[in-house]
Image (tube, helix red, strand yellow):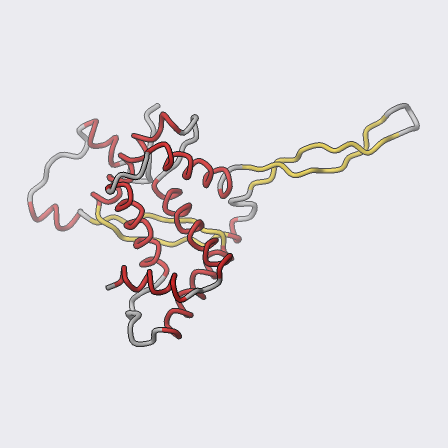
Length: 207
């Protein structure tokens, strides 16, 4: 089965010829797509607080339309720009696979159970129990729709295809990649606080 690197699967459709060249009017109508990003609800709220803090610190410089969707898009765009500048693919592959394991794959946690030694004697024994860190309950996630150019989604799909041989059979989609980039950013914010340096960096991108 061919891999699908996003919900739109643009790369495979182009390779198979399912997407053909269109006229200019169709290009304008169909060139933008919506993709859905799932985030842990707390980290989603943390991002909203970050934006509110930016508005409090720079009330005249943060555009009214700047929101969580804009922030995620901006972080993704900056990530792709670093790729263009020559970031090592091995380093990017490690960054994404570590992010996938941390935020999306099932982890194990110790669980104490009683194991029989004899008919009447038991001892406590520690086993590993799988725990889904991304979606233990659907209500714990926030879902954001981001509108972006088809070419920007395709660029992410091509990057993931190029990195696939370095990812040790770990499958990552464009939606997951954007979530990983955001969650890495928000972890940095949580660790260091809403420093003016981080806020100014975001303002530079806005401008």
